[in-house]
Image 1 (tube, rainbow, N blue to C red):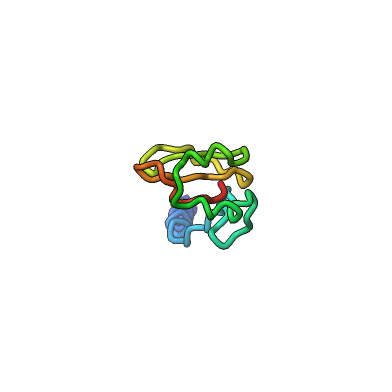
Image 2 (cartoon, rainbow, N blue to C red; image 1 turned 120 degrees about the vertical axis):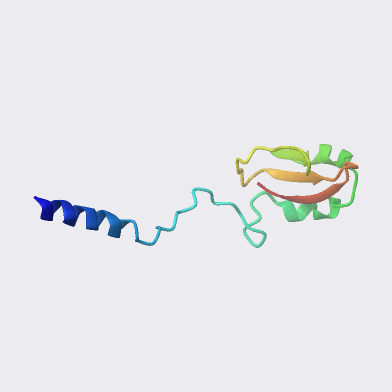
Length: 95
């Protein structure tokens, strides 16, 4: 009986020494070099302009300042229009 307990204790300790398994990302976020699924490259000429031009952009879109909280959901078809503190467009990308 002592032998079984010792073997089980040793096995438990060895199991804790194993390398952690790599976790698979559940999100498939596009990278800067990824596909342009929302046609953001067509709107890069708006960077530096006032946020008023945002009204003419197609849906789905999300406009926000960098200091504002936003949800972390990812929609590859959505345009993200990022504004600075003066409501000037500083970036347009998908997500």
